[in-house]
Each structure stands twice: as structure tokens, then as C-alpha cells.
Image 1 (cartoon, rainbow, N blue to C red):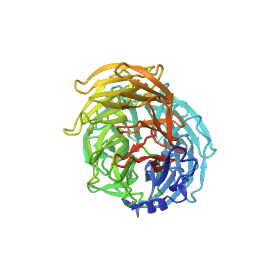
Image 2 (image 1 turned 180 degrees about the vertical axis):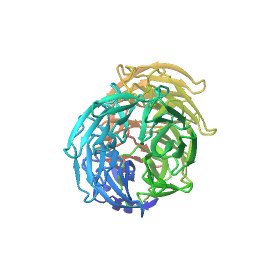
Image 3 (image 1 turned 90 degrees about the vertical axis):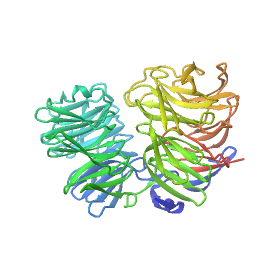
Image 4 (image 1 turned 30 degrees about the vertical axis):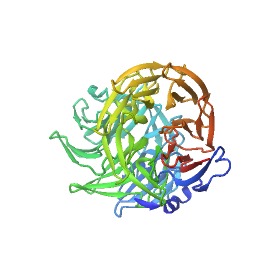
Length: 639
């Protein structure tokens, strides 16, 4: 979808609460540079929660403020109403009755209810101190059940009294209730993470029964669960298993391997189970009686599916990038909700890169925004995930993609995105990327799958397409920062893990020989640091910054620290992917870092709303810098 910048700005309407164009005032331009606004960095309407009732579908946007509940006429395929929700940045949970839509929000676990006739929004009392209401389900008696994070709790909400009852943790010690369903007699089924369990809860007694087959205990999540009068069906991550249990006797079960990573949506039609899985985005059917798994096709390639529904003999699906589809007669009819009337807004950007030919790329949620500075147009290109880190080399841009830790390229000539491959192992979340000119290798640091400590260094040879992963270089630590010089990679680790407490206590810097593929040494330049956010090589010195903003400049040959300092203002981010002067982004500033670890502000006052760490891109041809002001892409002209 290619549109002019003016049209994009107009499309945001009243929902965009930030200045979009023009030069910044004195507060934003403090420092030596001048800021020029280029409009929303990523404009879109990705979705999370989805629900269907009769001839209406409902979706909740992701990352937009305020979040939008879109109402879809399933007959015409048009979005006929956009309702602003009063809190949150999105809503993973969604369910609907004859008269009310319920939405479960994040980053505070509010549950809102929207009157289907009037669009009026009211809210239940807050669900304790929970941050995510990940899933919602309706019981036969009309009560709503919510599964939450980080307490891993189940809540009961009574629409008649507006009361909320805390049923406690589904499984003691587990932080996620990622999926929830209710059977015809009111038993609640909670799927957990970051250890996969499936628990049946009787709300009358608050008793619990563990149902998940023990062979699936090694999975990180029961990502999705669905029930029918006869079946209980659960889907897992990262093994992509489908567990089909007899509801009358759950000890009778079948486990089906999908060959994928995540079973993310399930709907049951009698003795047939339909489900989608990623990373492919494929739709499958499983015939329970015949034990037959069939891959029906791929409605929207590479997409996450937010919900599956049955209607008039067809399977309906909602895809995370903002697509609504119908599968019938062996094929999919796909509607782009952003073109069908779902209100757009600025997303929190994931990453930024300058191509050197007048374009700037910004990673979004299952989309890449291509800003052509030559004619002012912006093109959104669908992609299979979130580009957490990017770097432009020659006529293509390399992207490290979450979830699943994939490596993609964007071709500057054709505008096509191509997948090189998967990093593999337990890698899931790319943390940093560096192109090494000396070896012509791409280096990517990763963090492991939810529920697992550690991470890897991936060495990618774009010429052959080969990806070599080196896991566990530092036990229980991820690789959060990467740079290189003369065939040696320098890695900064982090003790953080997704979904579980850290096991390591102190991060370090490691040198890795790209010829022998062996670790050379380790070093702790900042004692007690728990994460190195970014590293940069310049004129024989290694520059680094911890996640708390402590800067160091050291000699890697002797492993001695020459100077330390503090990066401020703002939350620290990444050094620019470029040779030359160390240029560091924070959420509030772009800084030059000198050899004595002192800093000079290029600009301050950005108040940037990055989804990940702050980033800055350097145009190798002009020297211009590109980063964010709030959610706006800006160019920084340097004096």
C-alpha cells in the first residue's frame, strides 16, 4: 500500500497526539543538530483480540493509543464502527455475547465492556496488580473468565453485579495464563506458561485438575485452548503440538505434531479440529476419528492468527497484521482491515535503518514502513514478524525477526522481502545485529525462547544462505550486543530471560574468533553489570554501554578500561550500525560518545516511544541521522 505522506497524516485523524511535520522547537532541538519531522514512523492497525457473533466480527488494535475496537460487517467486509477504549495499548482478550463485547487489555489488565447497540464503554474493577488480561471466555451462566500475567491468575467477572473474584494462580509459580476456555457445564480450562500446563478449574469449589499429557510438560506454553461438548483441545509453543482430549475422560488423548512452532488459534466443528500455526500461518484440519491431519493452505503467509471462527460452513480468521479472512472451497478471501475502515494510528516502532539511497526503513508489527524521502511517499510492506534489528548493506537491508528468530532481507530495487532462514535452536528474540565488512558476515545476538535462559550468536553468510548458531557461549546468558573488527566479534551479554527469573548474576563481554569459531576471552569491564545494551568499535577502542546507562571505553587487547561515564538523558538504547564516530541513541537524546566516555548531545527532548531499545540510523551517503520523536520519524541535520 503506497500513499503520500500527506494522506498518511490525514488518515490519523484526531487519534494522533503528537506534532507530525515541521521543525522542532528549542526544547526538542537542544544540542548541535536540527530536527526535521517526517511523519509517523509506522502507521498501521495491527490487531490482537478478535471475536465473532452472528454477522459481526470484532478486533482490538495493538500498540495504538487509544486502542480501538473495530466492528466488522461480515457480509460486506467493511469496518462499520471504531470505538475508542479508555485504557491500554491493546487488548489480547476478546469475547462477545448477544449484547456486549468484552476486551481484556494491557499493559494494565483492565476489562472493558462495549454495548453492541450504542458503543458505550464501561469497565470492570481492575484485576488486582495484573498487567495483561491475555484471554477471556464466557461461561453458560454469563460470567466472564480472564487469564492474566504476571500473576498467572484466573479471575471471574460478573456482569450483573460488576464484581470481580480472584480465583488465584492457575498453577503455583507460573506467571502466565495465556489461554482460557469454558465448557458447557461451566468448567474453566486455563493454559499456562512458561511451563506448559492445562488446568481444569471448577469455579464452584475452586478445585483444580491437571489435564495436559506429561509428554508436553517440556513445552513453554499452552498457547491456545478450545472446548466443545466432546473435546478439549490445546495447542503448544514452541513444539507446535496439538493435544486432543476426550472431555468425558481426559486420560484418553492424542498428541499431534504440526511440524510448526506455535499452534496459535483453534476452533472445533464436531469431530473436526481446525487450527492455525506459525511461522507459516497455515490453516490445518484434524479429523479426530480418522486421526488424519491435513494442511488446508495458507490464508495469509507468515502471519500470527488471533482467532478462528465458524460461520456458514466456512472458517474465518483474524491475522495479527490487520487482516480478516474467510477460508472456503479450498482458498482464502482476505480483507485488509486498514483499507476496510479500521482506524489507523502510529505504532511504537521496532527498529530503523537508512538505505543510503534516499529511503528510511522502520520496523513495525508484521509490517515494514518504507519512507521514500525523495517523493515523500510511504509504503507499508507486509512481513512475517517484527524486525527487531536492521542494517543496510549495499542494495539490501538485513532484518532480524521476532518471533522465531528469523533472518530476512529487503531488496532495495524490487521492494520484496525474502527469508534467508531461521537461526534455530532455542533462539527466539533477536537482540542486536552487526555487519562485519572484513568477513562479509552478518552477526546476530539472540535471547532464548520463553521459559529458557540463555541465547546465541548467529553467524549468517548471505552469499551461501548458511546460518550457524552458537548457543551457550556464556551459560544462562543471552547475547544482547554485537560488534566486530578484523574478524573478531565482540559480544555483550545480558542475564535477562523471557518468562523466567535469571540464573546468572553478572554480564560480561566476550571475544569470538569468526575464523576458528571459538571464544577467545571474556571480560567484565563494568563489575556488577547485568546487561550490556550495545557495543561499538572505533579506532582501536571498544565502546560499550550497560542497560543502566553506564558507558565505558576500553582497550580490548589488554582488556583494560580507559574511561567510564554516564549516558543521559533518557533510557539507554543502541549505538548506530555504522563505522565512524560512536553515536548512541536514548529515548530522549542522540549522543556522540568521545574517547574519554564523555558525551555531547546532538539533540535532546525526543521522548521517543520505541517498542524496543532506542535506535539511531546513519545515512552512509549524507551523514544524516534518523531516529524517533515520540512515534514520529525524524531526520537530524548535524552542524
